[in-house]
Figure 1 (cartoon, rainbow, N blue to C red):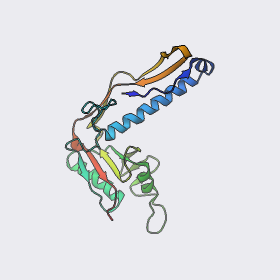
Figure 2 (cartoon, rainbow, N blue to C red):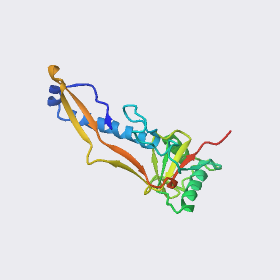
Figure 3 (cartoon, one colour):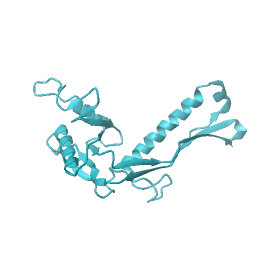
Figure 4 (tube, rainbow, N blue to C red):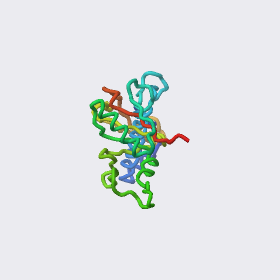
Length: 204
């Protein structure tokens, strides 16, 4: 999976500024990780070239048979707890929740009936946990949705390394180089029942 090459950079600019190459490659690596995250969560099997069946199928795409569903159960915290129960009934352990940052913020800032913030109970803000389970936020998860999973049932496959390469051939006559970052990735879901797609949206 390549991250799209960036705009050409003057090679003398890179030579004159020691940290510029590291900054550019770092930004490209960040872009690659965000793109991979999107595929792992929502990929429909289409690859970078638009070929169906050759890309990653994400575990929230609805295309992996066996992934469980948790309906909204009164409020967000209770719904997350119900998802844990679903996993435990089948012998799995909840290792992580994945939530949109806006949903996590809403849970963290929920107030009790007295109007004060609920600093106790199931939320551990310092450790970013709810019901003793680690919370990971991602904008790849739509607002109003979430996922719970036993982290042993899914793995991102990859080859030995992510390659960062500088191509001088395309801009040779203009003394320009292009940064390219790529790696080979896949997603293995060994036990789909260990993943739950959660609805955090209260029906009107």
